[in-house]
Length: 332
Image (tube, rainbow, N blue to C red; front, side, top):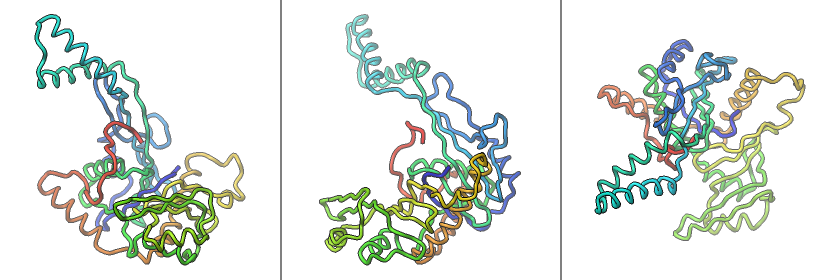
């Protein structure tokens, strides 16, 4: 649970109970793709129990699960099907279809093939901390995070607005300082993975994996202008992760100290949620402090934007960050 984290701050005016959240999510329950449907999305019971609630509370932390199913239709297969249709028209009529007709044939071929296509499914853990006002998504893709945020903005009662967590010092600036000075913030240690990238037109990249970073070579790269885009860190000897320039956490792993004193048969959904949210809810404030605190104004701007969209009936969710990939053809 929670191998990646994209973190949002929720606007303070949003104050609802778990029951209200559950009622809103019922409008977007997941249903598998129909025969000619390319993609299906929605929320499923996070415990995995049929007909269970879509929002679970464990220790005051709210957990949801967003599901995606997508049909796998290789482009080469679709192209062959279209060509078959084109050839048939040429044989029967003696003419070649034009561009518009070929587009129509492609749509027709897709409808023919979709009922036979394989599907792939993926899901994303969604964590809402109502006290800390954070929304955490278990994904490394900003595009997929944007999709879930847009769903929540549309579904949840007025006042729900979020903005990506934004700190006074950028992660890239801080990571460069930690590496150059060999001085990580209190409570954190630098691990053995890093990526440095040149900001100029060369886009030169240097990657270190399973390699000590307290070496002169790393400092020379930074002095030459390369900036860190990823850096592996460990917090309090309890959680290891990779911090990115966009303030995402990837490759999250809970270390042995987290599980000391816990019997092997003490697993299960509630235990997993309690451990994950308990550790990460302590890590986040320390990370924000290491980056000189949270920047002001982002949540207010998001709230105003959402309020404006609601008043015009065009709520599409926040557009506070560019998307990195199109999520339309793949689950998480």
